[in-house]
Image (cartoon, rainbow, N blue to C red; front, side, top):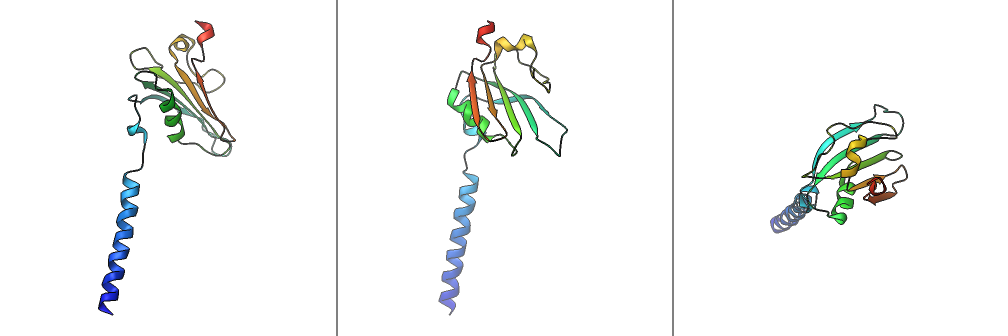
Length: 135
């Protein structure tokens, strides 16, 4: 009986150890290339309807795949909208964002590398150089 308890204790401790190991080694934003830094954030005050989150993030280089992965790591609510504007770290970027149709100042549009958007149906869209026609 004592051997059975010892064996069961070892099995349970092993399972708990594996679970803790998996949680601590889960990939995240810090594992992405590009040195992402959130520089501005705004959220609507609507708590009964769709939640709108808008971010401005600086990035080093143009790691397109990592930009989409970064967006996938960000919070998102069902029927809400998450929008992320990516800017080069060495150029000017907005320190304040606005709700509505225009989220960043027009003067900052030329520096925008990409816009990530996850809509209310969880459809992801990454637009590269979204304001290129204005240049």
